[in-house]
Length: 195
Image (cartoon, rainbow, N blue to C red; front, top):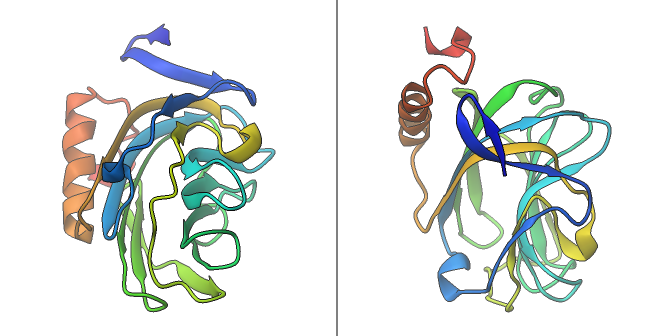
């Protein structure tokens, strides 16, 4: 934790700097949403915002920012052979910029869908299925914020806020929540997308 003019935040950089939460059935989802505020110091490699996976056979989900600025969301069934991956276009996220990210995943087997909103702008990400995804299963993995399995692809930056919910919020709800958080944070995010 470091002190900033916006309060205390998690400053994470390096493979061993992450936050771990013990496994709980409430962290394995059917439909779910995530909302967060973060800032990356660099974007020279893929970075994991959060994940619930500890090994090749215990993967549930992972949210990353790829080195291209792409938002990537992976939802696994039981291992690396049955999953759905969702990707936005490149250049959506940049280093040095406060970024709000919201997403909502609706599980429906291979026809599962996701909504992604970055800084108030909705994106319709492309999805691809590997194997046969039929649903997420609790495999006992801890939730890691800032890294994933084997402490790889760590985040290099700060996480100001993270909320996971067991419902799939609508696009309008995600945008509304981001606007409300922005107002509470007293101008931490650039105002361009709010006007």
